[in-house]
Length: 377
Image (cartoon, rainbow, N blue to C red; front, top):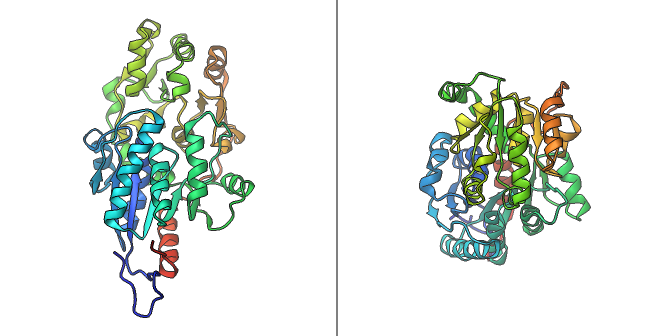
Protein backbone atom coordinates (compact mmCIF):
# COMPACT_ATOMS: atom_id res chain seq x y z
CA UNK A 1 0.00 0.00 0.00
CA UNK A 2 1.02 3.61 -0.37
CA UNK A 3 2.39 4.90 2.88
CA UNK A 4 0.60 7.72 4.68
CA UNK A 5 2.78 10.58 5.82
CA UNK A 6 2.66 11.63 9.46
CA UNK A 7 0.08 14.31 10.19
CA UNK A 8 -2.16 13.34 7.26
CA UNK A 9 -5.90 13.59 7.98
CA UNK A 10 -7.59 10.29 8.80
CA UNK A 11 -8.70 8.47 5.66
CA UNK A 12 -6.45 10.55 3.43
CA UNK A 13 -3.22 9.05 2.19
CA UNK A 14 -0.45 11.14 0.71
CA UNK A 15 1.22 8.43 -1.27
CA UNK A 16 4.82 7.80 -2.14
CA UNK A 17 4.29 5.04 -4.64
CA UNK A 18 0.68 4.02 -5.10
CA UNK A 19 -1.02 0.64 -5.15
CA UNK A 20 -2.86 0.57 -8.47
CA UNK A 21 -5.08 -2.23 -9.78
CA UNK A 22 -5.24 -2.32 -13.59
CA UNK A 23 -7.98 -4.42 -15.18
CA UNK A 24 -7.78 -5.97 -18.67
CA UNK A 25 -9.53 -8.84 -20.37
CA UNK A 26 -9.51 -8.47 -24.16
CA UNK A 27 -6.88 -8.07 -26.90
CA UNK A 28 -7.27 -4.29 -27.38
CA UNK A 29 -6.82 -3.79 -23.62
CA UNK A 30 -3.61 -5.81 -23.58
CA UNK A 31 -2.27 -3.42 -26.22
CA UNK A 32 -3.51 -0.30 -24.42
CA UNK A 33 -2.13 -1.27 -21.03
CA UNK A 34 1.39 -2.06 -22.31
CA UNK A 35 2.88 1.47 -22.30
CA UNK A 36 0.83 2.59 -19.27
CA UNK A 37 1.92 -0.38 -17.19
CA UNK A 38 5.56 0.18 -18.11
CA UNK A 39 5.37 3.84 -17.09
CA UNK A 40 3.33 3.15 -13.97
CA UNK A 41 5.78 0.63 -12.54
CA UNK A 42 8.60 3.15 -12.43
CA UNK A 43 7.26 4.69 -9.22
CA UNK A 44 4.21 2.63 -8.23
CA UNK A 45 3.09 -0.88 -7.41
CA UNK A 46 0.76 -2.21 -10.10
CA UNK A 47 -1.53 -5.21 -9.56
CA UNK A 48 -2.55 -6.41 -13.02
CA UNK A 49 -5.86 -8.29 -13.18
CA UNK A 50 -6.64 -10.37 -16.29
CA UNK A 51 -10.36 -11.23 -16.33
CA UNK A 52 -10.08 -13.74 -19.16
CA UNK A 53 -13.06 -12.19 -20.94
CA UNK A 54 -11.88 -13.11 -24.45
CA UNK A 55 -8.76 -15.18 -23.83
CA UNK A 56 -7.36 -16.84 -20.77
CA UNK A 57 -3.78 -15.92 -19.91
CA UNK A 58 -2.22 -18.84 -21.78
CA UNK A 59 -4.02 -17.95 -25.02
CA UNK A 60 -3.18 -14.24 -24.68
CA UNK A 61 0.40 -14.80 -23.49
CA UNK A 62 1.81 -13.95 -26.93
CA UNK A 63 0.50 -10.38 -26.60
CA UNK A 64 2.00 -10.05 -23.11
CA UNK A 65 5.35 -11.42 -24.25
CA UNK A 66 5.62 -9.30 -27.41
CA UNK A 67 4.56 -6.08 -25.72
CA UNK A 68 6.53 -6.65 -22.54
CA UNK A 69 3.46 -6.66 -20.30
CA UNK A 70 4.16 -8.18 -16.85
CA UNK A 71 2.47 -11.47 -16.00
CA UNK A 72 -0.91 -10.74 -14.36
CA UNK A 73 -1.10 -10.87 -10.58
CA UNK A 74 -4.56 -12.39 -10.97
CA UNK A 75 -6.01 -14.39 -13.87
CA UNK A 76 -9.74 -14.74 -13.25
CA UNK A 77 -10.50 -17.03 -16.21
CA UNK A 78 -14.11 -15.89 -16.53
CA UNK A 79 -14.46 -16.79 -20.22
CA UNK A 80 -17.41 -16.36 -22.57
CA UNK A 81 -20.99 -16.10 -21.34
CA UNK A 82 -24.06 -13.90 -21.80
CA UNK A 83 -23.41 -10.23 -21.07
CA UNK A 84 -25.21 -10.28 -17.72
CA UNK A 85 -23.62 -13.49 -16.50
CA UNK A 86 -20.13 -12.55 -17.69
CA UNK A 87 -20.27 -9.07 -16.15
CA UNK A 88 -21.68 -10.46 -12.90
CA UNK A 89 -18.99 -13.13 -12.62
CA UNK A 90 -16.26 -10.58 -13.21
CA UNK A 91 -17.81 -8.15 -10.73
CA UNK A 92 -17.78 -10.83 -8.07
CA UNK A 93 -14.17 -11.88 -8.70
CA UNK A 94 -12.81 -8.34 -9.09
CA UNK A 95 -14.46 -7.32 -5.82
CA UNK A 96 -12.60 -10.15 -4.06
CA UNK A 97 -9.29 -8.84 -5.47
CA UNK A 98 -10.03 -5.27 -4.42
CA UNK A 99 -11.02 -6.29 -0.90
CA UNK A 100 -7.80 -8.27 -0.56
CA UNK A 101 -5.42 -5.75 -2.15
CA UNK A 102 -7.06 -2.52 -0.85
CA UNK A 103 -5.65 -0.43 -3.74
CA UNK A 104 -5.43 3.34 -3.85
CA UNK A 105 -6.62 3.43 -7.43
CA UNK A 106 -8.30 1.27 -10.09
CA UNK A 107 -7.55 1.79 -13.78
CA UNK A 108 -9.83 0.44 -16.53
CA UNK A 109 -9.54 0.58 -20.31
CA UNK A 110 -11.98 0.98 -23.16
CA UNK A 111 -15.52 -0.35 -23.34
CA UNK A 112 -15.68 -4.07 -22.57
CA UNK A 113 -17.62 -5.96 -19.90
CA UNK A 114 -14.30 -6.18 -18.00
CA UNK A 115 -14.18 -2.37 -17.93
CA UNK A 116 -17.72 -2.01 -16.60
CA UNK A 117 -17.26 -4.77 -14.02
CA UNK A 118 -14.02 -3.18 -12.78
CA UNK A 119 -15.61 0.25 -12.51
CA UNK A 120 -18.68 -1.07 -10.68
CA UNK A 121 -16.61 -3.09 -8.22
CA UNK A 122 -14.39 -0.09 -7.47
CA UNK A 123 -17.12 2.53 -7.13
CA UNK A 124 -19.09 0.34 -4.72
CA UNK A 125 -15.97 0.10 -2.55
CA UNK A 126 -15.29 3.86 -2.82
CA UNK A 127 -11.98 3.35 -4.63
CA UNK A 128 -10.83 6.06 -7.01
CA UNK A 129 -11.29 5.07 -10.68
CA UNK A 130 -9.48 6.17 -13.81
CA UNK A 131 -10.90 5.40 -17.26
CA UNK A 132 -8.53 5.29 -20.23
CA UNK A 133 -10.35 6.07 -23.51
CA UNK A 134 -13.17 8.05 -21.92
CA UNK A 135 -15.75 10.04 -23.83
CA UNK A 136 -16.06 7.91 -26.96
CA UNK A 137 -19.62 7.63 -28.26
CA UNK A 138 -21.19 5.84 -31.21
CA UNK A 139 -24.66 6.98 -30.03
CA UNK A 140 -25.93 3.46 -30.68
CA UNK A 141 -27.42 2.05 -27.49
CA UNK A 142 -27.90 -1.36 -29.12
CA UNK A 143 -24.13 -1.82 -28.88
CA UNK A 144 -23.07 -3.31 -25.52
CA UNK A 145 -19.83 -1.33 -25.79
CA UNK A 146 -21.78 1.93 -25.80
CA UNK A 147 -23.58 1.06 -22.55
CA UNK A 148 -20.28 -0.01 -20.97
CA UNK A 149 -18.44 3.18 -21.85
CA UNK A 150 -21.28 5.52 -20.79
CA UNK A 151 -21.72 3.84 -17.40
CA UNK A 152 -17.97 3.64 -16.80
CA UNK A 153 -17.50 7.33 -17.59
CA UNK A 154 -20.19 8.32 -15.11
CA UNK A 155 -18.64 6.14 -12.40
CA UNK A 156 -15.05 7.34 -12.91
CA UNK A 157 -13.10 10.01 -11.03
CA UNK A 158 -10.40 10.69 -13.63
CA UNK A 159 -11.34 10.59 -17.31
CA UNK A 160 -8.51 10.23 -19.81
CA UNK A 161 -9.80 11.20 -23.25
CA UNK A 162 -8.05 10.56 -26.57
CA UNK A 163 -9.65 13.29 -28.70
CA UNK A 164 -11.29 16.72 -28.53
CA UNK A 165 -14.54 15.16 -29.72
CA UNK A 166 -14.54 12.95 -26.63
CA UNK A 167 -14.32 16.05 -24.41
CA UNK A 168 -17.41 17.48 -26.11
CA UNK A 169 -19.29 14.21 -25.66
CA UNK A 170 -18.60 14.20 -21.90
CA UNK A 171 -19.51 17.86 -21.55
CA UNK A 172 -22.86 17.15 -23.23
CA UNK A 173 -23.50 14.55 -20.51
CA UNK A 174 -22.61 16.97 -17.73
CA UNK A 175 -19.10 15.65 -17.11
CA UNK A 176 -16.42 18.34 -17.08
CA UNK A 177 -14.47 17.78 -13.85
CA UNK A 178 -11.15 15.88 -13.99
CA UNK A 179 -11.38 15.36 -17.76
CA UNK A 180 -7.90 15.21 -19.33
CA UNK A 181 -7.03 15.29 -23.03
CA UNK A 182 -4.02 12.95 -23.13
CA UNK A 183 -4.10 11.46 -26.62
CA UNK A 184 -4.45 7.81 -27.46
CA UNK A 185 -2.39 5.08 -25.80
CA UNK A 186 -2.66 2.86 -28.89
CA UNK A 187 -0.64 5.51 -30.73
CA UNK A 188 2.03 5.14 -28.03
CA UNK A 189 2.17 1.39 -28.70
CA UNK A 190 2.22 1.77 -32.47
CA UNK A 191 4.93 4.42 -32.35
CA UNK A 192 7.07 2.31 -30.01
CA UNK A 193 6.68 -0.94 -31.96
CA UNK A 194 6.41 -0.21 -35.68
CA UNK A 195 10.16 -0.68 -36.17
CA UNK A 196 9.99 -4.06 -34.41
CA UNK A 197 6.96 -5.04 -36.50
CA UNK A 198 9.04 -4.38 -39.62
CA UNK A 199 11.05 -7.50 -38.76
CA UNK A 200 7.92 -9.63 -39.18
CA UNK A 201 8.09 -12.35 -41.84
CA UNK A 202 4.30 -12.55 -42.19
CA UNK A 203 4.23 -11.22 -45.77
CA UNK A 204 6.76 -13.83 -46.85
CA UNK A 205 4.92 -16.58 -44.97
CA UNK A 206 1.63 -15.67 -46.68
CA UNK A 207 3.39 -15.09 -50.03
CA UNK A 208 1.91 -11.62 -50.47
CA UNK A 209 3.38 -8.30 -51.58
CA UNK A 210 2.99 -4.87 -49.95
CA UNK A 211 -0.14 -2.97 -51.08
CA UNK A 212 -1.25 -5.97 -53.15
CA UNK A 213 -3.93 -7.28 -50.77
CA UNK A 214 -6.86 -6.22 -48.60
CA UNK A 215 -6.90 -6.97 -44.87
CA UNK A 216 -10.23 -7.91 -43.25
CA UNK A 217 -11.46 -8.49 -39.71
CA UNK A 218 -15.00 -9.20 -38.44
CA UNK A 219 -15.93 -9.79 -34.83
CA UNK A 220 -18.90 -7.66 -33.72
CA UNK A 221 -22.10 -9.55 -32.84
CA UNK A 222 -24.15 -7.31 -35.18
CA UNK A 223 -22.11 -8.76 -38.06
CA UNK A 224 -21.35 -12.28 -36.89
CA UNK A 225 -24.53 -13.28 -35.03
CA UNK A 226 -26.81 -12.14 -37.85
CA UNK A 227 -26.74 -14.75 -40.61
CA UNK A 228 -27.90 -12.33 -43.31
CA UNK A 229 -25.28 -9.74 -42.42
CA UNK A 230 -22.44 -12.25 -42.21
CA UNK A 231 -23.49 -13.78 -45.54
CA UNK A 232 -23.59 -10.39 -47.29
CA UNK A 233 -20.16 -9.45 -46.02
CA UNK A 234 -18.60 -12.76 -47.09
CA UNK A 235 -20.30 -12.54 -50.51
CA UNK A 236 -18.87 -9.05 -50.96
CA UNK A 237 -15.39 -10.23 -50.02
CA UNK A 238 -15.63 -13.15 -52.43
CA UNK A 239 -16.73 -10.90 -55.32
CA UNK A 240 -13.47 -8.93 -55.35
CA UNK A 241 -10.73 -9.64 -57.85
CA UNK A 242 -8.08 -9.04 -55.22
CA UNK A 243 -6.62 -11.19 -52.47
CA UNK A 244 -8.10 -10.69 -49.02
CA UNK A 245 -6.16 -11.71 -45.91
CA UNK A 246 -8.70 -12.63 -43.24
CA UNK A 247 -7.36 -13.32 -39.71
CA UNK A 248 -10.53 -14.93 -38.41
CA UNK A 249 -11.80 -14.28 -34.88
CA UNK A 250 -12.61 -17.55 -33.02
CA UNK A 251 -16.29 -16.56 -32.65
CA UNK A 252 -16.52 -15.66 -36.33
CA UNK A 253 -14.90 -18.94 -37.35
CA UNK A 254 -17.35 -20.88 -35.17
CA UNK A 255 -20.38 -19.12 -36.68
CA UNK A 256 -19.13 -19.55 -40.27
CA UNK A 257 -18.91 -23.30 -39.66
CA UNK A 258 -22.18 -23.43 -37.72
CA UNK A 259 -24.13 -21.83 -40.58
CA UNK A 260 -22.26 -23.67 -43.34
CA UNK A 261 -20.96 -20.44 -44.85
CA UNK A 262 -17.65 -21.93 -45.98
CA UNK A 263 -19.16 -22.19 -49.47
CA UNK A 264 -19.51 -18.42 -49.57
CA UNK A 265 -15.78 -17.94 -49.06
CA UNK A 266 -14.09 -17.38 -52.41
CA UNK A 267 -10.66 -18.56 -53.46
CA UNK A 268 -9.41 -14.99 -53.20
CA UNK A 269 -9.86 -15.09 -49.41
CA UNK A 270 -6.95 -16.42 -47.38
CA UNK A 271 -8.14 -17.34 -43.88
CA UNK A 272 -5.58 -17.43 -41.10
CA UNK A 273 -5.70 -17.78 -37.35
CA UNK A 274 -5.57 -14.62 -35.25
CA UNK A 275 -2.18 -12.97 -35.80
CA UNK A 276 0.25 -11.82 -33.14
CA UNK A 277 0.45 -8.08 -32.50
CA UNK A 278 3.61 -7.51 -34.55
CA UNK A 279 2.43 -9.64 -37.48
CA UNK A 280 -0.95 -7.95 -37.54
CA UNK A 281 0.57 -4.47 -37.33
CA UNK A 282 2.77 -5.28 -40.30
CA UNK A 283 -0.22 -6.63 -42.25
CA UNK A 284 -2.07 -3.36 -41.51
CA UNK A 285 0.89 -1.22 -42.55
CA UNK A 286 1.24 -2.97 -45.92
CA UNK A 287 -2.43 -3.46 -46.81
CA UNK A 288 -3.92 -1.69 -49.82
CA UNK A 289 -7.11 -1.13 -47.79
CA UNK A 290 -8.55 -2.47 -44.55
CA UNK A 291 -12.08 -3.80 -44.05
CA UNK A 292 -13.08 -4.01 -40.40
CA UNK A 293 -15.75 -3.57 -37.73
CA UNK A 294 -13.12 -2.91 -35.04
CA UNK A 295 -12.78 0.50 -33.42
CA UNK A 296 -9.07 0.12 -32.69
CA UNK A 297 -8.24 -0.95 -36.23
CA UNK A 298 -10.03 2.11 -37.67
CA UNK A 299 -7.69 4.21 -35.58
CA UNK A 300 -4.56 2.23 -36.46
CA UNK A 301 -5.47 2.43 -40.16
CA UNK A 302 -5.60 6.21 -39.91
CA UNK A 303 -2.26 6.40 -38.10
CA UNK A 304 -0.67 4.08 -40.68
CA UNK A 305 -2.20 6.06 -43.59
CA UNK A 306 -4.14 3.07 -44.91
CA UNK A 307 -7.71 3.60 -46.23
CA UNK A 308 -10.27 2.01 -43.91
CA UNK A 309 -13.66 0.59 -44.93
CA UNK A 310 -15.74 0.17 -41.77
CA UNK A 311 -18.38 -2.55 -41.78
CA UNK A 312 -20.64 -0.61 -39.42
CA UNK A 313 -23.32 2.07 -39.63
CA UNK A 314 -21.65 4.28 -37.03
CA UNK A 315 -18.31 4.80 -35.32
CA UNK A 316 -16.93 6.32 -32.15
CA UNK A 317 -13.83 7.42 -34.11
CA UNK A 318 -15.64 10.13 -36.08
CA UNK A 319 -12.44 12.09 -36.75
CA UNK A 320 -11.24 9.38 -39.13
CA UNK A 321 -14.44 9.85 -41.16
CA UNK A 322 -14.21 13.65 -41.09
CA UNK A 323 -10.61 13.50 -42.33
CA UNK A 324 -11.68 11.32 -45.23
CA UNK A 325 -9.62 8.21 -44.44
CA UNK A 326 -12.49 6.05 -43.19
CA UNK A 327 -15.88 5.29 -44.76
CA UNK A 328 -18.93 3.60 -43.22
CA UNK A 329 -20.53 0.93 -45.41
CA UNK A 330 -22.50 -1.18 -42.93
CA UNK A 331 -23.25 -4.70 -44.14
CA UNK A 332 -24.42 -3.70 -47.61
CA UNK A 333 -22.73 -5.72 -50.33
CA UNK A 334 -22.95 -2.98 -52.98
CA UNK A 335 -21.55 -0.32 -50.62
CA UNK A 336 -18.70 -2.62 -49.58
CA UNK A 337 -17.76 -3.34 -53.20
CA UNK A 338 -18.06 0.32 -54.20
CA UNK A 339 -15.69 1.34 -51.39
CA UNK A 340 -13.19 -1.38 -52.28
CA UNK A 341 -13.08 -0.17 -55.89
CA UNK A 342 -13.52 3.58 -55.49
CA UNK A 343 -12.51 4.75 -52.00
CA UNK A 344 -9.04 6.23 -52.48
CA UNK A 345 -8.30 9.01 -49.97
CA UNK A 346 -5.32 11.27 -50.57
CA UNK A 347 -5.51 13.92 -47.85
CA UNK A 348 -2.98 14.43 -45.07
CA UNK A 349 -3.48 13.09 -41.56
CA UNK A 350 -3.60 15.44 -38.60
CA UNK A 351 -2.35 14.80 -35.07
CA UNK A 352 -5.81 13.68 -33.97
CA UNK A 353 -4.61 11.17 -31.40
CA UNK A 354 -1.87 13.06 -29.61
CA UNK A 355 1.86 12.83 -29.97
CA UNK A 356 2.55 9.31 -28.72
CA UNK A 357 3.08 10.15 -25.04
CA UNK A 358 -0.41 9.51 -23.64
CA UNK A 359 0.83 6.87 -21.18
CA UNK A 360 3.31 9.30 -19.59
CA UNK A 361 0.60 11.94 -19.22
CA UNK A 362 -1.87 9.44 -17.69
CA UNK A 363 0.55 8.20 -15.05
CA UNK A 364 1.65 11.73 -14.11
CA UNK A 365 -1.98 12.80 -13.64
CA UNK A 366 -2.69 9.76 -11.47
CA UNK A 367 0.40 10.44 -9.35
CA UNK A 368 -0.43 14.14 -8.99
CA UNK A 369 -3.99 13.30 -8.01
CA UNK A 370 -2.82 10.64 -5.55
CA UNK A 371 -0.28 12.91 -3.89
CA UNK A 372 -3.12 15.27 -2.92
CA UNK A 373 -6.19 13.30 -1.93
CA UNK A 374 -6.68 9.57 -2.10
CA UNK A 375 -9.71 8.74 0.01
CA UNK A 376 -9.98 5.18 1.28
CA UNK A 377 -13.22 3.40 2.12
